[in-house]
Image (cartoon, rainbow, N blue to C red; front, top):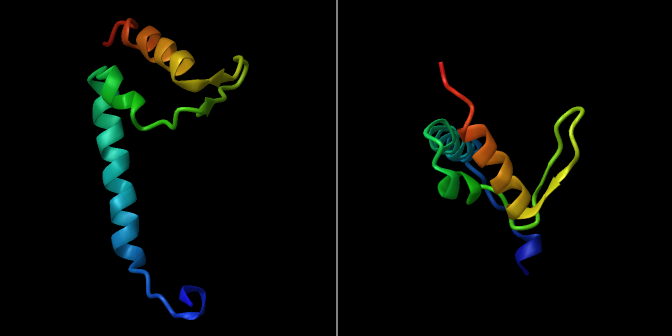
Length: 74
């Protein structure tokens, strides 16, 4: 009966894992590594931005990432 046991979660360690994932995502996005960045989204993910149509799935999100990669940085 796993549901009846007390499980201790190291919240600080779990928070650090999430922060590390966030840093890795930010690094891949900043370097326009589209394939790596896309791996952070589930196959059926949706992106909802204000005033924009909802993007559904990897194909739509990939197009957004490719478009963003073509924006001059500066």
